[in-house]
Image 1 (cartoon, one colour):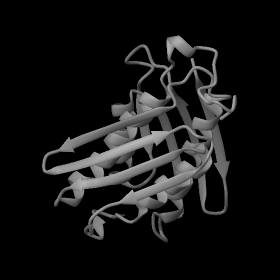
Image 2 (cartoon, helix red, strand yellow; image 1 turned 120 degrees about the vertical axis):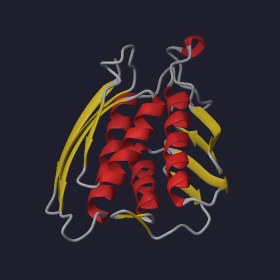
Image 3 (cartoon, rainbow, N blue to C red; image 1 turned 180 degrees about the vertical axis):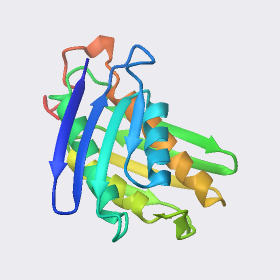
Length: 199
């Protein structure tokens, strides 16, 4: 099973995160998230559940300031464990994409496990907050994730009015697209999916 754990402690956050990519059972796909921010927990749960990943996240952060440090640092840690779990990326499909509906929201998400960290993130103007979550932090999360995982990720909201639905659709779509990209391809099980020979 491709799995990795990272612990990261700074003056702002104390995080332990485990990711399981290959989950053959409900037990392996278990998702446990506690970041101190209810809506962010919900979004991470959607990402993992719709990606069929196992995910355990514990984050104690300086939430008396706000949730910025916690959200960004969880993104950093998730990127690190993706990179570690994938190793040299031999046998993966590399690319994944989806256009995902969530009620009136419609989101395009495409990913390339490229070895190059890049994020394109296009949304309409969102409400500033959902509960105690600053919606601009979603971009910060994906920026940190793409940089540390060294992946190219395009997220584009094609339509949508409800901020809650839009963010849910973004995290669901990202989970599904990444899941497809990291899936092992039986035709290339020991090959690096690049003409360069490395990712």
